[in-house]
Structures are given as structure tokens and as C-alpha cells.
Length: 92
Image 1 (spheres, helix red, strand yellow):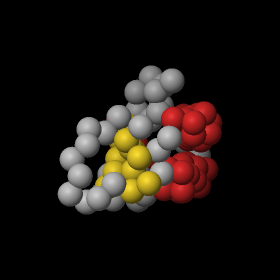
Image 2: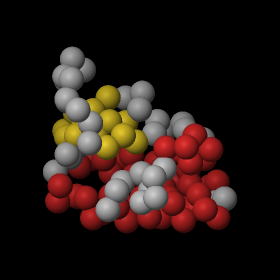
Image 3: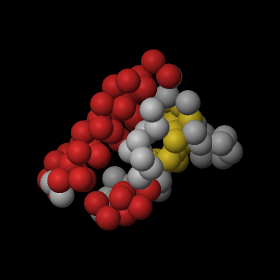
Image 4: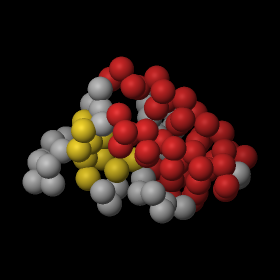
């Protein structure tokens, strides 16, 4: 799957990592719902680090359609709320 991290670029992540990423997404959603700013920041960082660690960056000039778009590392809780679907940032 191709994942875009806003402000950084695109990363190709193998679908085998989807379960682990989805767990972090569930944690992030719970922290957002409870208003846990510190937990939100920690989990957002962990989610983005996991995507970077599992993935292979695409060249800057690559124009692949992104299957998933994640917020920038410095996104606020409110900004991320606006990006959320019913399933969180990662559907499924």
C-alpha cells in the first residue's frame, strides 16, 4: 500500500504490517476521543515512525496514488479529528 505522510512524501508499506498499524490507529482514536493530548502526540509519533520503519520511501518525483494519507508529525489533535473517518485514520 502507498502511504502519504503529509509534508513528507510517500512510502510503500507491505500489507503484512496493516494489523500493527491499525492497532496504533485504534490507540490514537481512543486518545483523541478522551482528549488525551500527551497520549495522542506519543501515539501519532509511534504510528508515523512505524510507517517510516516498515516502508520504503518513494522518490520525490514519483506520482503514485496514495491509498492512505496520514497527518504531518506536528498536526494538532483538532487537525487530525478533521481527517478521521468512522474507522480512524486507517480504514478496517
